[in-house]
Image 1 (cartoon, rainbow, N blue to C red):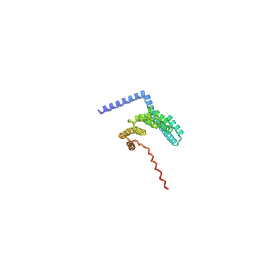
Image 2 (cartoon, one colour):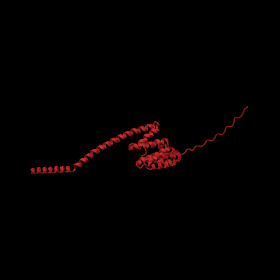
Image 3 (cartoon, helix red, strand yellow):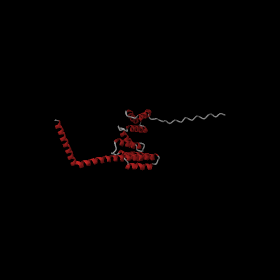
Image 4 (cartoon, helix red, strand yellow):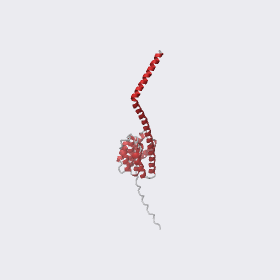
Length: 236
């Protein structure tokens, strides 16, 4: 019985070797081509990773240089670097450069900076969070302008449940205080207090705002001039 099992095992192994040889003869070219493609693909992937890493490191240096130039007041030179990053940098640094460029423009010209943030807000290629951030920055730049109504409308939209609702509600409350509308200001501040996710530092500021709202408008009355005292009698 053992001899029969050994014989069957040898026949099975011979059969397998013949099958492998037949497969190799028929598909050896395809197998070699696939192996070459796999090796080339791995090498290409590693090369691409190295290129991306090098590009990111270069862009990081350029971004830091542009920030330093902006802080030193070399605005024109900083703008050139930001523009170069927007045109040729990696995707992440292109986006950072666009936001930073809009912020620097807003320092010089609020309307122009807001317009740049509008372009970012309208970019459907960005995520909702980044677009909302751009809307917030544009609204803040327009808030003290000659026509703040569009900015207030944008802030009201952002105050309705977006990640930037805390800042939007605070700005809306302060804008209402500036107009002397203490009731509206109180409504926005109450929303901040009721939100469990309100940051701690904002809750501390709300205490000050609430005291101002509770005090109401201050009425300044003009002091009446005192009656002139009669001249002293003339004695001789």
